[in-house]
Length: 124
Image (cartoon, rainbow, N blue to C red; front, side, top):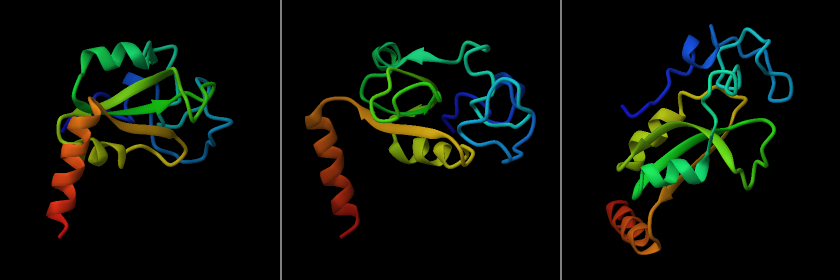
């Protein structure tokens, strides 16, 4: 499993998955187990462009901090990466309800189109 951070562990600042916080209220002071808790304080937020350089031709899954643009974030917390997109999607299902996540392929368009073509052939 490619999960980088146990999403309800002290590694990201959380204790339990309470589900009581919302995107707007969750932060370093709350006691929930979501990745927003202490993302910055624990040094988990990185520039996405730096992460992309480490994992070329892989699927990447990020939790986006509350202060970032949800549609064009510059920074995020990498929670999963893998060559197989299913592994990343499986990891993303473990993210609590109130997070903004981004999952995408970090490679060339040609490689992505090959993947898309093979995926469509499997569904036929």
